[in-house]
Image (tube, rainbow, N blue to C red; front, side):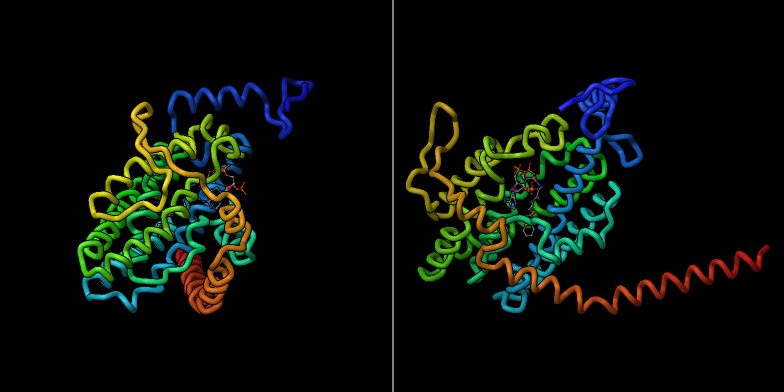
Length: 331
Ligand code: FAQ
């Protein structure tokens, strides 16, 4: 990995080994890295990748639930769902802004998403078939997102960690509204309980996949942990999620669809069955049930929003010209 340079030891990216050591010492001392600080190219690229994927996930993540806004069963449910979907849009915007501090433009990230080149969370490529799916998403998907994102509030990169604090507060409300929908259905008519169970059956395994591949197959995990971008590994967070969620299912009388699920006294956690990684990679590579629809929906929204971008640019150009004119007049 390292080659000896004339001035000092250099990495393949031409970075001085002493510089990398100083950077690691800052990380180990829990200092926050800010946009204007020097940072290794790999650290910058890892963050652009992760924050960009995270931002896209929030934006694409509006689609499955947005599908139910017009069909929410009551005015109260509709208001809560509208607010939740808007929150997800807001999270996407904070995250695009955080990624921009690393030198990538919002346009570039958007282009990559619309071209189908950028990744976003596998979970959003599944369809929302019934109202219970909205409960399941809030409970499980937001639940998994919080489990992953609370540690990101302590991420070494300042702008990302600060964005995560507000995001987590909002996700916590989302999780509770989802669980409350599931509780209401589980305590309703037998048809409603069945609908809730069916949603849990369909969303359980994809929710476990959200945490990413097993640690042994995680390409970026070790390095991201050393840089304190990630604080826990994919498997550690998945285990915590299972431990927290199983009692919640029991409390509302629903059954986790896993015959191998069993409390393990020794590890003080649940053992659970194997994850279908073929399905995971199929979805990640663009062949899940809804991948094409999701990208088509984002492209349509982008095209239909062209006039807003043009109007905003025209407005900005006018303001700039006016400011320039008054500067000249004042001279
Ligand atoms: N889906 O080496 P690792 C939400 C990729 S937000 C697709 O382990 P890493 C809120 C990974 O990118 C949900 N791809 O990677 C909401 C990499 O590919 P690459 C999103 C996945 O980065 C709720 C390759 O596999 N949350 O839900 C997935 O160390 C409701 C190897 O993986 C975040 O993005 C996946 N599930 O760990 C919104 C949180 N997993 O880039 C609306 C921030 C892995 O080399 C409604 N991200 N891959 O081509 C993270 O914490 C990390 O990036 C992980 C993956 C944990 C997701």
